[in-house]
Length: 485
Image 1 (cartoon, rainbow, N blue to C red):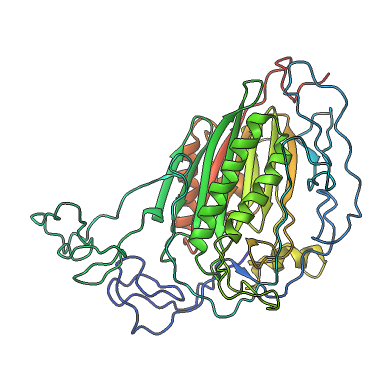
Image 2 (image 1 turned 180 degrees about the vertical axis):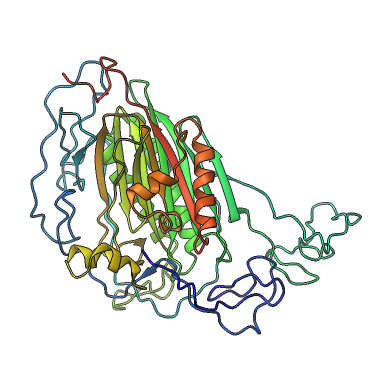
């Protein structure tokens, strides 16, 4: 886990004395023009190592492997023959295993592999994504985000309140215009800046919240960044048997790439749409998650500029928009997780006497060092390179290899799906469980708000996004996928 040096002096805004971060053109708190301010100390956003290889060591407990490398772990077991009476009759998913013995958190399978070319599931056509090496030089920090689909992307919490020292209650904005929140006199132009004082205005994505019946999510800009480069989508669908499927997608824009906010929004919306399309048609949730990540990658690839690119350019699509992704689906008694990058998912049981668990493994420099046996986890995550990622969605990524896994919890609990802006302050499973309120399953939105507050209280050095999905175990004999034959 990367730690900020508390003794290091951090530049502050000349106007409001708020701490600044590297690359800011305006103060994130008051909008002060920082063009004449010396560059502040570097922060530790999500980065990419140019030329970094993927994890070379096999993760024995998940069966995951480096893209392009053969699997050497245990082979995936087949789906048991015959459906459990009353259960969702999933079609056979290649590479998916199962077990009938309940455990604290029973893993069904590791990385999911689509059927061989030419034998896709009915109505499904696996997509391929090309990639080249990311060049981390010449980054453009500019770019404005676009919100995802209104039905699945959270609503804005609204602009920040005006500074009471400068606000004039008598000033009323002309119809169809907005007044600057800083000077309360100038009108805001279409680019989001005051025509009078030039201050940048709060963006819609600075703070977002959304709650459905069985899932909730909160995203916040944090205390150091000038914009929110995270995005999420939450939704629900009906399976063919009428039972519900609940979906949560969380994406973290790669700060060293161009338009990371657009990349995360596009990926979250595309993955959500893909799952909403596949699950009601009876696609196995693990296969649907794999295809959703591929679809999300294609949406991010589409943001990369095409003009002037030829097949002879070895580093085409340099500095392309990029993001990480993690998603969770609760359906038919199964918990399915999918991810690329270093955004994470955790399992926290309602009965805290049971052990929590981290359900994902990072595609990052730190995880690579630990897997190779060169460092222990504490040493690796204390290194300044810890958050340099080795897997991402984007036109210049390595060959796309989505990670997916299925679980069958034997007790109720909540699934925490989050970006590193949260888990930086609760890295271990026990730490995360300690931060999750005891009533999270009954009040998921409140719990998500508490977790975001936990990150902000810890320093808020990054954007913070978290989604919570309660998981209720059906009673024996109810016909869920958890029931035994």
